[in-house]
Image 1 (cartoon, one colour):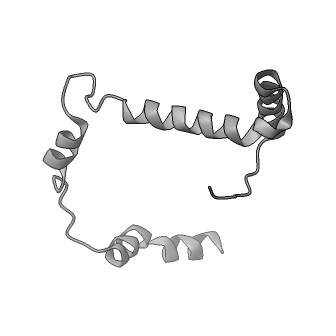
Image 2 (cartoon, rainbow, N blue to C red):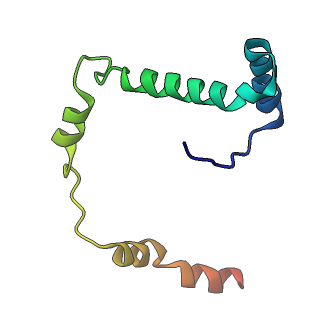
Length: 95
């Protein structure tokens, strides 16, 4: 068991407190309730389908399209190319 500090939104906290008191009759079950909800979400996300609407495997689509865009310049070159001409415009506008 590990202790952690968690910040909840006020509305969410009130809902969790209400549900804790309804289920366990006291506040001592708060951690238990939060753990149950987190486990439920974890199980739901593990059981999500990995297929998209067309039935293709999402991972397969990513692997097939990886590298399909060809970039022949690095980030610095791209920024210089995009910003080229800004100096002239700034002078013209008096900036």
